[in-house]
Amino acid sequence: MADASLSRPEGAAEDWTIPQEWDRYTPAEHAMWDRLFARQAAMLPNRAVPEFMAGLDMLRMTTPGVPHFDLLSERLMKATGWQVVAVPGLVPDRVFFEHLANRRFVAGRFIRTPEQIDYLEEPDIFHDVFGHVPLLAHPAFADYMQAYGEGGLRADGLGAIDRLARLYWYTVEFGLIRSGEGLRLYGAGIVSSHGESLFALDDPSPNRLGFDLKRVMRTKYRIDDYQQTYFVIDSFDDLLRHTIENDFAPLYAELADVPDIEIETILPTDTIYTRGTQAYARQKEKEDAH
Ligand code: HBI
Ligand code: FE
Image 1 (spheres, rainbow, N blue to C red):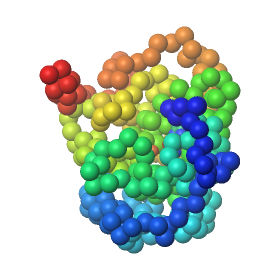
Image 2 (cartoon, rainbow, N blue to C red):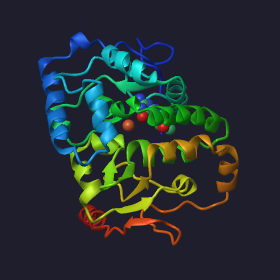
Image 3 (spheres, rainbow, N blue to C red):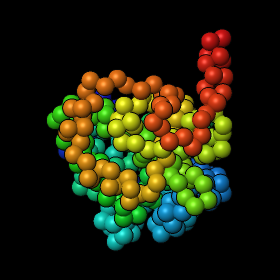
Image 4 (cartoon, helix red, strand yellow):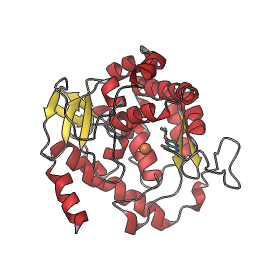
Protein backbone atom coordinates (compact mmCIF):
# COMPACT_ATOMS: atom_id res chain seq x y z
CA MET A 1 0.00 0.00 0.00
CA ALA A 2 1.46 3.34 -0.97
CA ASP A 3 1.76 5.75 1.91
CA ALA A 4 -0.74 8.60 1.57
CA SER A 5 1.96 10.94 2.84
CA LEU A 6 4.22 10.34 -0.17
CA SER A 7 5.21 13.75 -1.43
CA ARG A 8 5.47 14.60 -5.07
CA PRO A 9 9.10 15.03 -6.13
CA GLU A 10 10.23 18.20 -7.80
CA GLY A 11 9.92 17.92 -11.57
CA ALA A 12 6.95 15.55 -11.46
CA ALA A 13 3.69 16.79 -12.97
CA GLU A 14 0.43 17.18 -11.07
CA ASP A 15 -0.42 13.57 -11.94
CA TRP A 16 3.06 12.46 -10.78
CA THR A 17 4.30 11.63 -14.28
CA ILE A 18 7.82 12.46 -15.43
CA PRO A 19 9.49 12.19 -18.84
CA GLN A 20 11.11 8.81 -19.41
CA GLU A 21 14.26 10.49 -20.84
CA TRP A 22 15.09 7.36 -22.78
CA ASP A 23 18.30 8.91 -24.21
CA ARG A 24 19.77 8.95 -20.74
CA TYR A 25 19.91 5.18 -20.23
CA THR A 26 23.55 4.09 -20.12
CA PRO A 27 24.94 1.08 -22.01
CA ALA A 28 25.14 -0.71 -18.65
CA GLU A 29 21.43 -0.06 -18.05
CA HIS A 30 20.45 -1.35 -21.48
CA ALA A 31 22.65 -4.38 -20.86
CA MET A 32 20.89 -4.97 -17.53
CA TRP A 33 17.52 -4.99 -19.29
CA ASP A 34 18.86 -7.43 -21.92
CA ARG A 35 20.25 -9.71 -19.25
CA LEU A 36 16.97 -9.82 -17.31
CA PHE A 37 15.00 -10.18 -20.52
CA ALA A 38 17.11 -13.08 -21.83
CA ARG A 39 16.83 -14.94 -18.56
CA GLN A 40 13.03 -14.70 -18.42
CA ALA A 41 12.40 -15.14 -22.13
CA ALA A 42 14.30 -18.43 -22.03
CA MET A 43 12.22 -19.86 -19.23
CA LEU A 44 8.71 -18.45 -19.68
CA PRO A 45 7.44 -20.28 -22.78
CA ASN A 46 5.25 -23.12 -21.42
CA ARG A 47 5.24 -21.43 -18.01
CA ALA A 48 3.62 -18.08 -18.68
CA VAL A 49 0.14 -17.93 -20.19
CA PRO A 50 0.39 -17.79 -24.03
CA GLU A 51 -1.30 -14.35 -24.03
CA PHE A 52 1.66 -12.97 -22.07
CA MET A 53 4.16 -14.28 -24.64
CA ALA A 54 1.98 -12.93 -27.46
CA GLY A 55 2.01 -9.50 -25.77
CA LEU A 56 5.83 -9.49 -25.59
CA ASP A 57 5.97 -10.23 -29.30
CA MET A 58 3.27 -7.80 -30.30
CA LEU A 59 4.89 -4.95 -28.37
CA ARG A 60 8.28 -5.88 -29.88
CA MET A 61 9.82 -6.08 -26.46
CA THR A 62 11.92 -8.76 -28.05
CA THR A 63 14.15 -6.02 -29.54
CA PRO A 64 17.24 -5.26 -27.42
CA GLY A 65 17.53 -2.48 -24.86
CA VAL A 66 15.23 -0.68 -22.44
CA PRO A 67 11.88 -0.16 -24.18
CA HIS A 68 10.83 3.33 -25.18
CA PHE A 69 7.49 4.15 -23.51
CA ASP A 70 6.23 6.17 -26.49
CA LEU A 71 6.71 3.22 -28.83
CA LEU A 72 5.05 0.83 -26.39
CA SER A 73 2.15 3.25 -26.01
CA GLU A 74 1.76 3.56 -29.76
CA ARG A 75 1.39 -0.20 -30.18
CA LEU A 76 -0.73 -0.66 -27.06
CA MET A 77 -3.01 2.18 -28.06
CA LYS A 78 -3.84 0.37 -31.28
CA ALA A 79 -4.45 -2.94 -29.52
CA THR A 80 -6.41 -1.92 -26.42
CA GLY A 81 -6.18 1.86 -25.95
CA TRP A 82 -3.62 1.70 -23.13
CA GLN A 83 -0.52 3.89 -22.62
CA VAL A 84 2.60 3.56 -20.49
CA VAL A 85 3.75 6.64 -18.55
CA ALA A 86 6.81 7.13 -16.33
CA VAL A 87 6.64 7.93 -12.60
CA PRO A 88 9.44 8.43 -10.07
CA GLY A 89 8.46 5.39 -7.95
CA LEU A 90 5.46 4.50 -5.81
CA VAL A 91 2.64 7.00 -6.20
CA PRO A 92 -0.29 7.57 -3.81
CA ASP A 93 -3.19 5.13 -4.18
CA ARG A 94 -5.61 7.68 -5.63
CA VAL A 95 -3.10 8.79 -8.26
CA PHE A 96 -2.45 5.16 -9.15
CA PHE A 97 -6.16 4.37 -9.51
CA GLU A 98 -6.84 7.54 -11.48
CA HIS A 99 -4.24 6.54 -14.08
CA LEU A 100 -5.54 2.97 -14.39
CA ALA A 101 -9.13 4.16 -14.69
CA ASN A 102 -7.96 6.19 -17.70
CA ARG A 103 -6.02 3.29 -19.22
CA ARG A 104 -2.60 4.64 -18.33
CA PHE A 105 -0.15 2.27 -16.72
CA VAL A 106 2.42 4.00 -14.49
CA ALA A 107 5.91 2.54 -14.66
CA GLY A 108 9.18 3.23 -12.87
CA ARG A 109 11.87 4.40 -15.30
CA PHE A 110 14.92 3.28 -13.30
CA ILE A 111 16.44 -0.17 -13.59
CA ARG A 112 17.89 -2.33 -10.82
CA THR A 113 21.66 -2.62 -10.43
CA PRO A 114 23.50 -5.96 -10.84
CA GLU A 115 23.61 -6.25 -7.01
CA GLN A 116 19.82 -6.07 -6.92
CA ILE A 117 19.25 -8.56 -9.72
CA ASP A 118 17.11 -10.90 -7.65
CA TYR A 119 15.57 -8.64 -5.07
CA LEU A 120 14.59 -5.00 -4.81
CA GLU A 121 11.90 -3.22 -2.84
CA GLU A 122 10.57 -0.60 -5.23
CA PRO A 123 9.22 -1.76 -8.59
CA ASP A 124 11.73 -0.92 -11.34
CA ILE A 125 11.19 -0.72 -15.09
CA PHE A 126 11.79 -4.44 -15.55
CA HIS A 127 9.05 -5.39 -13.12
CA ASP A 128 6.66 -2.70 -14.33
CA VAL A 129 7.21 -3.00 -18.06
CA PHE A 130 8.25 -6.61 -18.64
CA GLY A 131 5.94 -7.87 -15.88
CA HIS A 132 2.82 -5.76 -16.33
CA VAL A 133 2.68 -4.34 -19.84
CA PRO A 134 2.43 -7.45 -22.11
CA LEU A 135 -1.00 -8.44 -20.78
CA LEU A 136 -2.32 -4.91 -21.31
CA ALA A 137 -2.37 -5.89 -24.99
CA HIS A 138 -5.01 -8.52 -24.16
CA PRO A 139 -8.54 -7.07 -24.36
CA ALA A 140 -10.11 -8.77 -21.31
CA PHE A 141 -7.09 -8.15 -19.10
CA ALA A 142 -6.90 -4.54 -20.32
CA ASP A 143 -10.53 -4.04 -19.28
CA TYR A 144 -9.91 -5.72 -15.95
CA MET A 145 -7.10 -3.27 -15.15
CA GLN A 146 -9.29 -0.29 -15.95
CA ALA A 147 -12.12 -1.76 -13.84
CA TYR A 148 -9.63 -2.17 -11.01
CA GLY A 149 -8.69 1.52 -11.22
CA GLU A 150 -12.35 2.56 -11.18
CA GLY A 151 -13.00 0.17 -8.30
CA GLY A 152 -10.05 1.67 -6.44
CA LEU A 153 -11.45 5.18 -6.68
CA ARG A 154 -14.77 3.92 -5.26
CA ALA A 155 -13.06 1.78 -2.60
CA ASP A 156 -11.14 4.82 -1.41
CA GLY A 157 -14.43 6.53 -0.55
CA LEU A 158 -15.58 3.42 1.30
CA GLY A 159 -12.40 2.87 3.32
CA ALA A 160 -11.92 -0.45 1.53
CA ILE A 161 -8.63 -0.02 -0.32
CA ASP A 162 -7.05 -2.80 1.73
CA ARG A 163 -9.63 -5.31 0.48
CA LEU A 164 -9.16 -4.27 -3.10
CA ALA A 165 -5.38 -4.28 -2.78
CA ARG A 166 -5.59 -7.99 -1.88
CA LEU A 167 -7.44 -8.63 -5.11
CA TYR A 168 -4.69 -6.83 -7.04
CA TRP A 169 -2.01 -8.74 -5.19
CA TYR A 170 -3.47 -12.19 -5.79
CA THR A 171 -4.36 -11.56 -9.44
CA VAL A 172 -2.34 -8.83 -11.21
CA GLU A 173 0.83 -9.43 -9.17
CA PHE A 174 0.78 -13.13 -8.23
CA GLY A 175 -1.99 -14.78 -10.22
CA LEU A 176 -1.97 -18.23 -11.80
CA ILE A 177 -4.35 -19.32 -14.55
CA ARG A 178 -5.65 -22.68 -15.75
CA SER A 179 -4.81 -23.90 -19.23
CA GLY A 180 -5.38 -27.12 -21.14
CA GLU A 181 -1.86 -28.23 -20.23
CA GLY A 182 -1.93 -27.39 -16.53
CA LEU A 183 -1.39 -24.19 -14.57
CA ARG A 184 0.30 -21.16 -16.13
CA LEU A 185 1.75 -17.91 -14.76
CA TYR A 186 0.31 -14.46 -15.43
CA GLY A 187 1.06 -12.31 -12.34
CA ALA A 188 3.65 -9.58 -12.96
CA GLY A 189 5.42 -10.21 -9.65
CA ILE A 190 5.99 -13.81 -10.73
CA VAL A 191 6.93 -13.42 -14.40
CA SER A 192 9.42 -10.64 -13.62
CA SER A 193 11.14 -12.81 -10.99
CA HIS A 194 13.42 -15.64 -12.04
CA GLY A 195 13.12 -17.51 -8.76
CA GLU A 196 9.38 -17.12 -8.33
CA SER A 197 8.68 -18.16 -11.94
CA LEU A 198 10.05 -21.57 -10.97
CA PHE A 199 8.69 -21.65 -7.44
CA ALA A 200 5.12 -20.59 -8.18
CA LEU A 201 4.58 -23.33 -10.73
CA ASP A 202 6.81 -26.23 -9.66
CA ASP A 203 7.63 -26.08 -5.98
CA PRO A 204 5.62 -28.36 -3.65
CA SER A 205 5.73 -25.71 -0.90
CA PRO A 206 2.93 -23.22 -1.73
CA ASN A 207 -0.82 -23.80 -1.81
CA ARG A 208 -2.49 -23.36 -5.19
CA LEU A 209 -6.22 -22.70 -4.72
CA GLY A 210 -9.13 -21.80 -6.95
CA PHE A 211 -9.84 -18.07 -7.17
CA ASP A 212 -12.84 -16.83 -5.20
CA LEU A 213 -13.37 -13.08 -5.01
CA LYS A 214 -14.63 -12.83 -1.41
CA ARG A 215 -12.14 -15.36 -0.17
CA VAL A 216 -9.24 -13.47 -1.77
CA MET A 217 -10.40 -10.16 -0.28
CA ARG A 218 -10.17 -11.76 3.17
CA THR A 219 -6.71 -13.25 2.69
CA LYS A 220 -3.56 -11.66 4.07
CA TYR A 221 -0.44 -11.62 1.93
CA ARG A 222 3.31 -11.34 2.34
CA ILE A 223 5.48 -8.80 0.60
CA ASP A 224 8.89 -9.99 1.77
CA ASP A 225 9.29 -13.39 0.11
CA TYR A 226 7.71 -15.90 -2.28
CA GLN A 227 3.96 -16.31 -1.72
CA GLN A 228 2.69 -19.18 0.42
CA THR A 229 -0.62 -19.31 -1.44
CA TYR A 230 -1.43 -18.61 -5.08
CA PHE A 231 -4.95 -18.32 -6.49
CA VAL A 232 -5.86 -19.80 -9.86
CA ILE A 233 -8.33 -18.15 -12.23
CA ASP A 234 -10.15 -20.04 -15.00
CA SER A 235 -9.69 -17.37 -17.67
CA PHE A 236 -9.22 -13.60 -18.08
CA ASP A 237 -12.84 -13.31 -19.22
CA ASP A 238 -13.90 -14.98 -16.02
CA LEU A 239 -11.75 -12.61 -13.92
CA LEU A 240 -13.20 -9.61 -15.72
CA ARG A 241 -16.75 -10.89 -15.20
CA HIS A 242 -16.16 -11.27 -11.46
CA THR A 243 -15.07 -7.66 -11.21
CA ILE A 244 -17.51 -5.83 -13.42
CA GLU A 245 -20.59 -7.85 -12.55
CA ASN A 246 -20.07 -7.37 -8.84
CA ASP A 247 -20.95 -4.22 -7.00
CA PHE A 248 -18.18 -4.23 -4.43
CA ALA A 249 -19.89 -1.84 -1.98
CA PRO A 250 -22.25 -4.49 -0.50
CA LEU A 251 -19.35 -6.93 -0.59
CA TYR A 252 -17.19 -4.62 1.55
CA ALA A 253 -20.09 -4.13 3.98
CA GLU A 254 -20.60 -7.89 4.22
CA LEU A 255 -16.91 -8.49 4.83
CA ALA A 256 -16.61 -5.82 7.52
CA ASP A 257 -17.37 -8.28 10.35
CA VAL A 258 -15.80 -11.35 8.80
CA PRO A 259 -12.33 -12.29 10.07
CA ASP A 260 -9.26 -12.25 7.84
CA ILE A 261 -7.83 -15.53 6.59
CA GLU A 262 -4.22 -16.32 7.41
CA ILE A 263 -1.78 -16.63 4.52
CA GLU A 264 -1.49 -20.41 4.42
CA THR A 265 -4.95 -21.48 5.62
CA ILE A 266 -6.91 -23.86 3.39
CA LEU A 267 -10.68 -23.77 3.89
CA PRO A 268 -13.07 -26.73 3.39
CA THR A 269 -14.72 -24.67 0.64
CA ASP A 270 -11.48 -24.11 -1.32
CA THR A 271 -10.81 -25.74 -4.67
CA ILE A 272 -7.38 -27.26 -4.13
CA TYR A 273 -4.92 -27.60 -7.00
CA THR A 274 -1.99 -28.12 -4.62
CA ARG A 275 -2.05 -28.61 -0.88
CA GLY A 276 1.34 -27.05 -0.20
CA THR A 277 3.90 -28.58 2.13
CA GLN A 278 4.97 -25.04 3.18
CA ALA A 279 8.47 -26.52 3.50
CA TYR A 280 10.05 -23.42 1.96
CA ALA A 281 8.34 -21.06 4.41
CA ARG A 282 9.16 -23.31 7.40
CA GLN A 283 12.82 -23.46 6.39
CA LYS A 284 12.96 -19.66 6.11
CA GLU A 285 11.38 -19.28 9.56
CA LYS A 286 14.01 -21.58 11.03
CA GLU A 287 16.83 -19.62 9.39
CA ASP A 288 15.40 -16.36 10.66
CA ALA A 289 15.17 -17.70 14.21
CA HIS A 290 18.95 -18.24 14.28
N1 HBI B 1 2.47 3.15 -7.45
N2 HBI B 1 4.10 3.28 -9.06
C1 HBI B 1 3.18 2.56 -8.39
N3 HBI B 1 3.02 1.25 -8.70
C2 HBI B 1 2.11 0.48 -8.03
O1 HBI B 1 1.96 -0.72 -8.34
C3 HBI B 1 1.34 1.07 -7.02
C4 HBI B 1 1.53 2.45 -6.75
N4 HBI B 1 0.83 3.04 -5.79
C5 HBI B 1 -0.21 2.34 -5.07
C6 HBI B 1 -0.31 0.91 -5.38
N5 HBI B 1 0.42 0.36 -6.31
C7 HBI B 1 -1.20 -0.04 -4.60
O2 HBI B 1 -1.07 0.33 -3.27
C8 HBI B 1 -2.67 -0.06 -5.01
O3 HBI B 1 -2.90 -1.13 -5.89
C9 HBI B 1 -3.56 -0.30 -3.84
FE1 FE C 1 3.62 -4.63 -9.88
